[in-house]
Length: 385
Image (cartoon, rainbow, N blue to C red; front, side, top):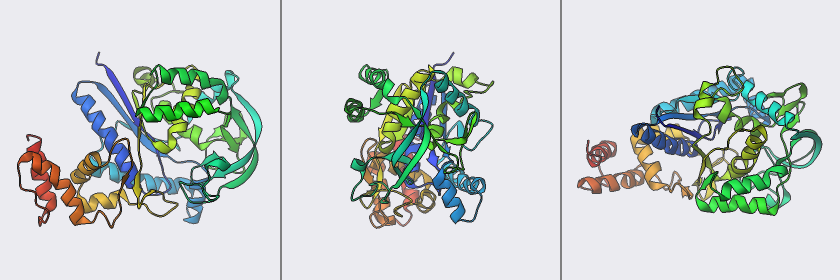
């Protein structure tokens, strides 16, 4: 039997068209998946969309649409992106999929309940709608979320809490032994620092009256699963966990690589492993943490309004050029900045042409009348084709 390889991206929030940051992550994962297939591994490449939560509901209402109609329309834009970039994913998971995703999320919840790791409590504090996350005062900059530049809401509500604090030592041991290997090393140190500072129990649900668009908590219709718990469970629900057709879960779990952005490190390196430990499910083997593609020095965010639409970027410059640019010009572990002013067509082609043309022994044509054709000729010659 072939050796298996399972790689995932984080699932993108379906409140708008995909931006260039998502294109970056899915391209990196695609490169690795293709390489593993070439090496003879039985490879499963998972990506998808996160479609629940209050932010989706509010955005859909503002657009005058039902939330399901709204996310269906945006998912089509992701499908266009995948086709343009020739992304070779094996399965696309949607968290609004009641047949394939919901059973896994609910089965996992029951495991946590049976393990006595869920209890009811009152949360009183700050909630950032942009992050769909509870945040603390010390995380704010001038009273606002640094990622979305909006002030958080003050909320007080009864939720289900997960005993995250119980699993700190076990997660620390897994990271230090590299059972859970976090790349780059600086991100592993960051997680260990979070654990050493003390981790607290976290809310895994919200009142149904406040979050009408999501997965109901089993046997508790007045509670909705917290959108981040819902999203994290996609990694196993997509393989059939919680369903009778769970052969892929048995074959491919644990994940060999979770590819994520640095802003969701805590969710993937602390909360997700703790949930898996509680449920008696093996930990993922590796978490690869990439930086942001920033725009004008700030994280690209639909809330801020500095997003570069990935589909427009590819339509303008061509898919092979964009794939090469993302893999070559943006460090996989650090931030890289793109703005429309900096990457106008002339500058973009100058950067994309230079390296493959140099390797192929072709002249570097900064002012080529047909830059895309020159790029393709140089690139494939450099690759020996």
